[in-house]
Length: 226
Image (cartoon, rainbow, N blue to C red; front, side, top):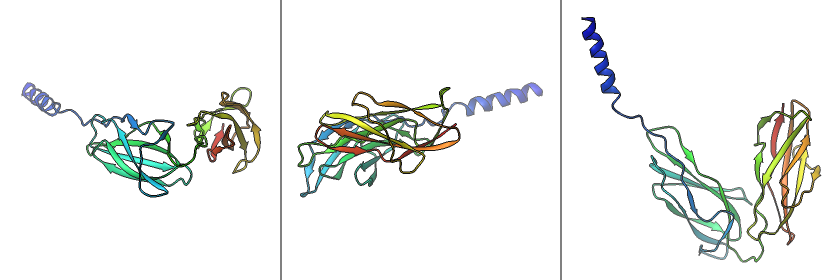
């Protein structure tokens, strides 16, 4: 009798285990507009706006995609969902944008996010300001262990359509917003060590400069030293 009961449980287990669990969606590869580029293919709608087509590759185990496009000057975002791998959106001419794709399906709660790409929507200007520097570390809101020398490394990267970045200005302080200029590195120098004390919140931002006198600002980031 006990043998029959065990056999019955084994058969139930095998029957229930025949169906694979739903798979989480994978992240999509972005295609266009290209990263750190000037998008010149927009269809003009009026003097200030053009329509740009965004394209990305299909990702596995995905039912739908959400695109998020953000004007880096106004910080206003457009969010749209689609089952296709392209979509057209109206954008301000001459403005810098970021965009990324979130992949999802209805079988799982997990989503997958693509890389974030920056581009300029072509306008009437012949010279573009640099893209706001990408903060690599510390991430905003992070708690960071200081080194044996009581230092934390600030790390970022820069990009410019015109490829004419001349340098950066690093502002760092316990005040928000930080107004103390602590470092003015050249274009190829994208990190700096700062002295900190434990259990203190610090604020920092990066200003990027180019040879035409244009500039961009990251906005304020913060971290807590441990």
